[in-house]
Image (cartoon, rainbow, N blue to C red; front, side, top):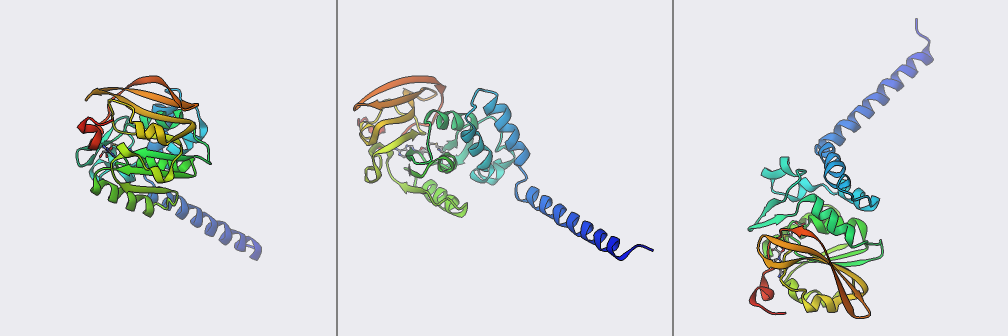
Length: 245
Ligand code: SAH
């Protein structure tokens, strides 16, 4: 015969195990890509030299598979860009991390992104800063990204459909600006909307399949540029495509 307190203990242990098992099952059900994401961060980002813990944590947190079309979900954590519809692409995760890293964001920063696309980069920025303003020229993409970010609970990202060539002057000056479409020149309005000491990162170049990822810093009203690495981005359309500065 088992003592009553042993039976109670046993029941307690079994109940506790069931709760634990259910929780871990639900967790893997909720995020079946967790292991793939952890591997992506370790192998494709950290191993290439990005050691900023805040950036790595943001890349671990944001579920990239929720930003790509269903048919591409199994590839969401691959080391490559993916189509997001309307002829546009979501960048390779390493490039997202690299661009984010070079902006050296603080939790108090206000950031402008040009080219919302899927909203993935905006979500990564929103994990690291206070306010993210993101402009997207294709209405359908802007609408989907806005809904997606709202559904995921982001309250510090504002998406608007518009031409990033003009920036978003109402919220300027920005501590940082990220341009995720290729431009042959640094748009003047974006420089104007960048605050003193602000950082801007953009793929600079007039060739369709080759641009220089460039870091621009504004000091005493003047800009300094530093080319970082070669990249391939979709071109900025809108007014810039018509040859305006
Ligand atoms: N950052 C995005 C990927 C961007 S792809 C993500 O994380 O998914 C580049 C995006 O820039 C495309 O969606 C394209 O429509 C947009 N774009 C191109 N020209 C633009 C312009 N002038 N203003 C705003 N967005 C523009």
